[in-house]
Length: 399
Ligand SMILES: *Cc1c(COP(=O)(O)O)cnc(C)c1O
Image (cartoon, rainbow, N blue to C red; front, side, top):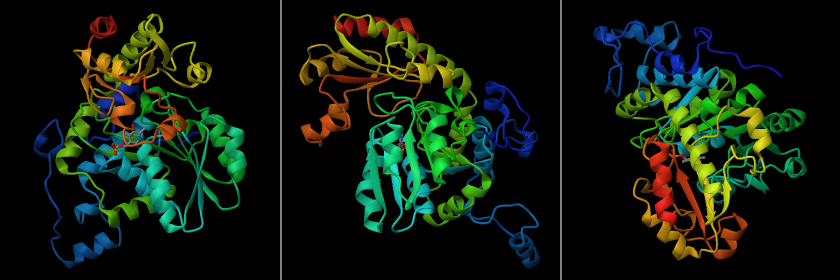
């Protein structure tokens, strides 16, 4: 297996050191310890020769902010270092990153195959919109590698999966997934938003592109939207070029917040992992709970793969309430006092939701059944509060 090339100028540090220092200049403007929030839409040239020098790539510098800014380059370097990849391309949201990659890589007549447990908006973009440009999407059951291979034909260009999947937390055997791609000469993409590079680094298994909604754990504070794709510079060159046309870029303020949030990334992940595990174990032992989906539990169907490939299992815990209809399930959601009812996950504040209501309200019962969303399902994103408090809160909500 080929290991990814690290950023050449990046020493091999531990995760917390990378979170704090990677990508940043040692000496910054005005001797400040932080990078500035640089609000510039354009960058000036001293004279015509300076423009030409820039165009001939003799000096690295900014031109027009849609093509990139120095602050964005810093945070991209930090993200690439955390993921162990050569380069990162930052987007204005996770969806913008997915759309940006698909549009850069696919032509009319091409086909993509993806595991069907996935963020419903990614599925919607492929099925509703890529189809309008003549791209064919095949969905196969999550972690069914034989079905994925059967769906491949000479027009297949990209294999896509999340890992772990949302909200079922199925864990993909990345080595196997990447091997299918290599065998057929097809590129592979993992949306590792739920795992984060702290828990697994898909590039190390030979996956071509890793994608994150940085809105979640990477930003970590429920205060920004961003997305990122990490991979080799060569493969990402056309992706970055297209982003410059699409304009799906982040504001200076967002870039600052993301760099700031990433400083505590490794610390936060330790707590998210610990809280997720503790809450999952509590729920698994509770008589009112029918089933818990959490890769850190031995009862989880993908526990072995998860243990082999992941450092921790994250903060997201999905569970089913025994003998509860949708109303009784909603009452439990309404009774918790610490987690807030909201979509999203991965921030310092715990968030709780009933997928039936929050994300699948407009779906027919047949579609919900097909997507595996029962009425009595609750999804809890454990924040960084104290596990005892979260558990006591769930205890009273379930009483
Ligand atoms: C939230 C999410 C996205 C979309 O990201 P946004 O930043 O909300 O656009 C994509 N994939 C997964 C797994 C997500 O959780």
